[in-house]
Length: 118
Image (cartoon, rainbow, N blue to C red; front, side, top):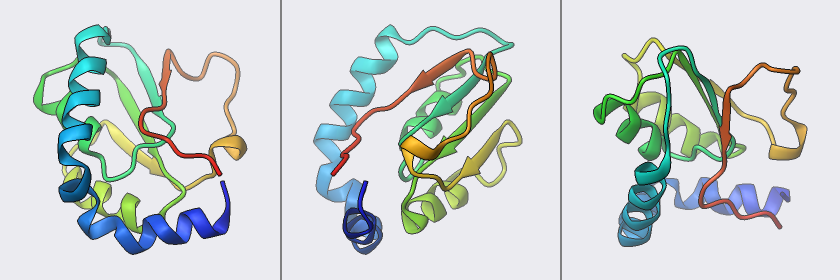
């Protein structure tokens, strides 16, 4: 991902969900129909953006032990932090996808939706 792409996502962070609402609802609902979790799962969302999908996991009572929301856009991640500020099972990282440091068996589930790599 380039600095130019991150800059573009930072600029559109506040309006991102409104602009892409129908697409996001469709892709997230399709994903969640197939996504299975257990109480002990540690999950990584590589491109968590504004935390909309994570919020759907929480609101839908999906079982998990810990969820890491990653996004290289600081402003998108700031929205996610605000949206999920009182959810203790969630932490945040601000890495480029290809630079995320993952230890062997650290995560039970890793997903990446609506991701643009340029």
